[in-house]
Image (cartoon, rainbow, N blue to C red; front, side, top):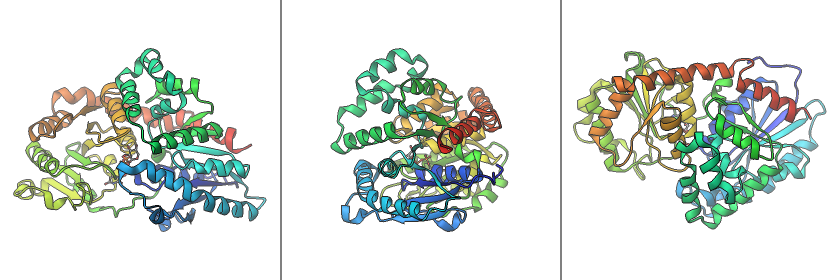
Length: 447
Ligand code: UDX
């Protein structure tokens, strides 16, 4: 994307410190930098990104006091972590932003504060200092339906008014979410909703054609405009923002494999599996006789490195047909011509990265929004297969074969390629994402 030299404003972006949120926010920063904005990234101390990977941005860390707050960093306790970050980071962020405004050069005004939807304290600070706040949503836009439609109306709206979205099973999600809400969950929901209402708008990392029905309904209910400008990683390719070291060697291994023959297996940065899952996956992959690239990150099985759990005889059986890494350069992997399928936990970033490269998915969601994403992939877009119930080696082998080679999977594979083409069109000048980005800069940043 061409840098527009006439633009000399600065944007302040506030990160939520987990991989699935850091990636899209730094990608968004790259998009605005390419449009000519100077970028300041504000982040908690915990999981801080590596500034040397992004020398074009200014990074400022704010104290998060997470140790003092004694919150657990496990996904199960994530609402308390969100509360602690919002409580602890607000005052230092305000001080820092105030200082930035005091030091502001008239030729480089701060145009706005873009924050991860979970870092809603940033909206209050932006309000106090008279700046527009914009929340960035790293999940499917459909997740916003729960925020913009009043709780009391959700079930009836989902059941009767959005028939195209029935396969998402939104009503079941409402029921399970409201079954036993914790105090922390209720507080986070209320505070983020309140912030969203005061924001100048929301930016969704999604694509209009993927979520047309949900976006139309959101447009009817949302008190603020939603700009759909994804997939961010394709709009302005950015450098890596991985917290773990990427093992680039797997690309030379991929170079040696036949086109569309490899199943890439990765469960993102937070999902976990049991020891028995590792055994079944191992033999499922071995018996499929397809080449595979498998990410076993430390902690994938809680408290373990993972690779020591591989069953006896497995590595000898697969030999060079398998490549196992702790962390992969995933966007590059999915764009590689040897990759024919992606076994994923259906994190939204992984979903968009696969859609953009036309790679069909084998879906094994683990928690939260991943179930909704799986239902989009398998039952609305029809570019993937769901792997349900207990993991079992025979079923895994069969599913890999259907995904990659068998005739039953052909339509799904073709559809996935169609989606790649449609995504490219959205990113071109005049395409939905590119136009929405232009509208955002005109409407929100130039006031
Ligand atoms: C979390 C939630 O689980 C997800 O559902 C939500 O939508 C975003 O936050 P995570 O589980 O990490 O994210 O999954 P995902 O959204 O797929 O993000 C993982 C990111 O890590 C992707 O951008 C992927 O490219 C990257 N990745 C993953 C690597 O670079 N290398 C790997 O080996 C694995």
